[in-house]
Length: 387
Image (cartoon, rainbow, N blue to C red; front, side, top):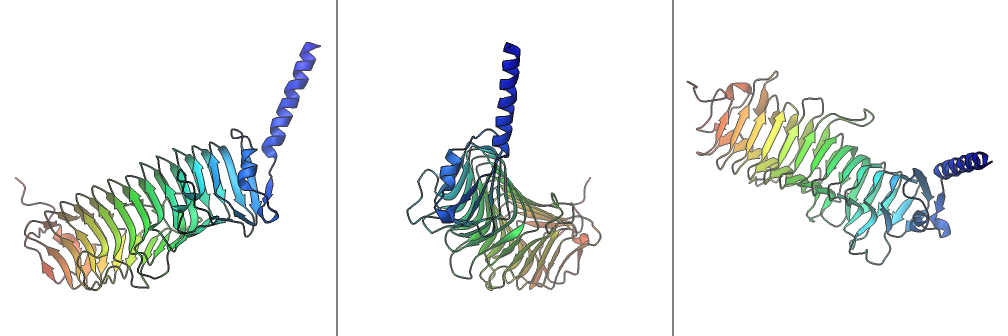
């Protein structure tokens, strides 16, 4: 008898857990229901899906969940309330200390008082943000060694600095989407990486003063990875003329363009007066590994500036049609051009190749069509004559 009772109890427990796991509540914010209220009643350790519709005006916190999907139905949005956000999590939607969380199919609308629309931190891992848009303050902030994938996200910022910010040793994959802001004088970046790592493909960054800003030993890899359902090339364009730098690589950071088919295409970058504005600015002990996947055209400022003890390496890149320098190497910096087919093309710029007396460009035989060269330390091969 005891065996039968125990077996019946076990079957009941399995059935109850399965029923709870398969339950998919729908929160109707238009009817006064709350995402936070529903999340507070849900178990955090078993897989669950929470769907919602309408506009939810609340600060939403997903804290300590394991295998949660938060899915918006058609037209669903999370709107920042008029009150200021809590100081501990100044986001409209915050994911913290969670694993395997998916955010999908909704908009996040923020006000200037919020740090950003979406914040992901406290070491969260395997977080997927897919087909989500943000509008208002900073778009998506990833901190505290979190691991996130962003797929087809659209970020429009009207206040704040960065559309996507990655810091504190976090790791982020970006596939597809658009980062932009209205053409105005506010200072902004599309992607800001500070002591984190980002892998990126198939996204467009438009009308940002600093389209990509990598600092404090951060790194960005442009490479073909993940789903084939999104584009491949990373596009940085500047139709409004507000851009100062396509990419800034500073303070021990690196920009690496992979050997696959994903290219970084930068057009119309920089400002008319030149200086260190332009498509790519590498400075303060940083590195650019361009390979064959860097294509720069029509820069208003410089093409590539390498300065302050930094290094850039090319092999089949293209830097053409700039108003000022094509490749500019200064302040004890170096640039090298490897053999490739086709050759690296640096041509049609105001000055194609420039270096100061303390810097060097090597691999001149691997550069095609450069007609205006101002560089006394210009080596035809990779090195001086070796013993």
